[in-house]
Image 1 (cartoon, rainbow, N blue to C red):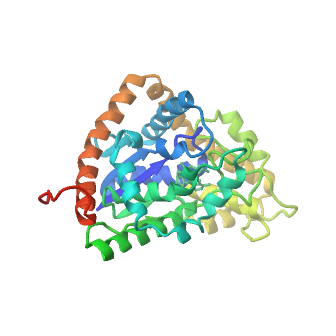
Image 2: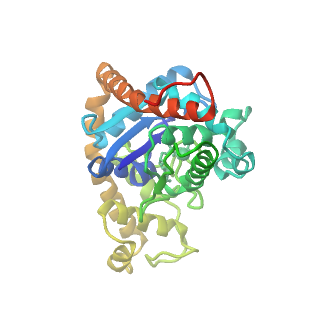
Length: 331
Ligand code: ATP
Ligand code: MG
């Protein structure tokens, strides 16, 4: 079983990424052949600074290694180092529906947030994402809830490809966690916590100091009630319940029965303490790993070599099936 996922190097990663995606990446190493990449080519679809991007790739790589990715047990690389992703993106555009791309809610949200240019890359983002996954013929894609629509689009593209050109690609499944698949912004609990779009005070960063974490969680927006239970009119409290459940590895029901009558103040403090303990070891390990850029670069390039070997094969098969290039014997 092959697992693939990618994460953006835009800014510092947050608790939502950690709970929704990164913990699944770490677990994936025990469940199958796991392949993960830092998607720098996706990050260029919104306004960015080239020098900052290069550094942010190291920040994100060190964060994932600190969380427990082990380059001996997974393939870990930088997307832009494997040029097959870009070529496959273009080839797949032939089997991607414009109408479906046009319905992607992430594009609508992000396009609305751009100050000047809405790039064509932002619109095409899901096609590159399809190429990322399909290049490795991955069976499973660990992601948060917000990526469900993009996975559906890549499944449709793979199915359309196979129907049109013959069985070549694996149609992947999303793997979305039961609890914590959509952690909300602490200041705007109607929006997901986000690397690029959220509020600063509502976003707990994986690398935040304990004091900052406590402050953000204690000042999170809740409702005028006092009962610790989930409900449609209790977005803030529901979010904190999910966070505590995910961090402790228990069900939201168990959190409700433990804290039901505790009052919001005591509950927030308990969530804050749990998140501080959860992230502290990652932050400490990060500081060691981030200091050695030469080693980070070595890890990413070694990963890219392994990734390329797989992706080249797939792109060759896709080109052959599509009639692109000369006839070549099957690899
Ligand atoms: P942006 O908002 O700019 O897209 P992001 O915070 O979504 O950034 P990504 O690198 O795009 O970060 O996402 C990495 C992974 O984290 C994806 O699998 C995504 O589904 C997951 N993820 C992102 N936000 C959340 C969240 N709030 N809760 C749970 N999972 C999330
Ligand atoms: Mg995202």
